[in-house]
Length: 305
Length: 256
Image (cartoon, rainbow over all chains, first blue to last red; front, side, top):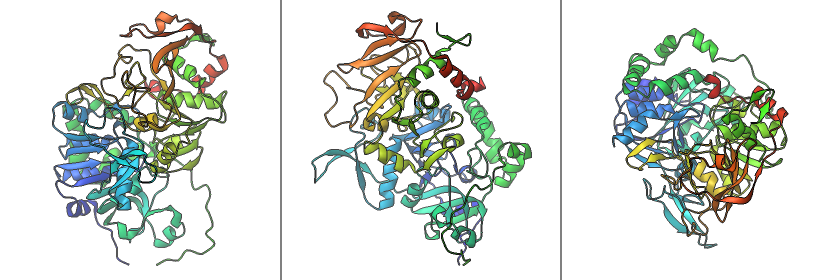
């Protein structure tokens, strides 16, 4: 068994280059904040960030100067408001962007994961999006004659994925909402994974339906508890809505946002220090008490490898 | 003015209760967060227990115990029948299996077109908004759409600044045949009234108790057509208002 496990700073230093197209995983839950913050600390530049629905990690990477382009369906502070850093960057003409839809982004990544150049779809045939920041070619179905949009594949250089657990070899398990994480990872050339727990292979192999990525798709694996805070990880900790609300206010001011990034990103060397700073009370506030509800039988005994 | 338990309904509450009663029991609804989600949750707890709620995050046939702040928030999958991927949900949408999409937006225009992309010019906007998300997809692919908007003359405009999600026609000549698969918006509910569409154009159909036809279009910058007879909708049911106030508090309003 070859271990994929490394430190997060090492994984980022080794596998993310300036100018890379980076898929950012997670939808609501499992947003890879720790990996994103490491990009900021290491001063990555000219990244193109992509995913369907983008959370405030995009806002932070834009403000920190890591991203020169964003490709998205939605970019904001979910349920609360806009991305203030993106708003400023657009108004100052300081960032490139492609406005797709969430379905279009899912299809772009799915086409990338399928290894085909495009997927036909019945969207983006009207409205102001085609031609604004994206070009959408038309394709005629060779069987029915139906005219459809040819949604182009997207193959990022590297995917950042956070999940509940993995074994040391790099087989990754996630539950709760997967969003477009699996397609995004499979479309990407390299995949950096952070997890809440490293478990024995026997644990993982006892429930292989839960596995979203086999180890041969994983480039590097890092053990980073609370690596998705302030988003959540199903079964581990809940969403820190207080922080999202506070962020909406502070990120309206570039100065306050810079101070926030100084405090919570540049001011801590790693996630462990971030967690100490977050404090036990906040961790308790976000941690529930409920345990496993039910398990399933596969009809065999799981074996360690 | 509508009242329940002695407290007059706020603008936000009228939108939720007014939109909820437009939902038919058994409909399969693709639900956006915010007021659309509150309305769908209320309908399911009152006259439409068989309503099927689906969120783009992958929460399928769900019944959130409290309103989710965002489509991917933890409560969205509490009490759900299935968790799928975004692709699962959008695939089902595209294959025509969702009866209704519930949307809101920053702007709506006379043809029901929606804008959630920018205020002002696309490249030099006054305000850059969040973008389509799933809204354009829902507008093109759900069998029908219902739009819920606060009564706000800045939001009701003759022509949207940017056409993110298509309504019934983008100009006087209509949109290309085959450009969308669904039937488009069937109605628009505000905090004052219900609108529908006649010849593809937003038309005042009915007002909530306590509002006149003029109130319903107050401040709008074009002459919005009205049905020959604009009915006054029956008062909101006290039981529905009570359930809304007890169980479906807007997570944003709850913090203010």
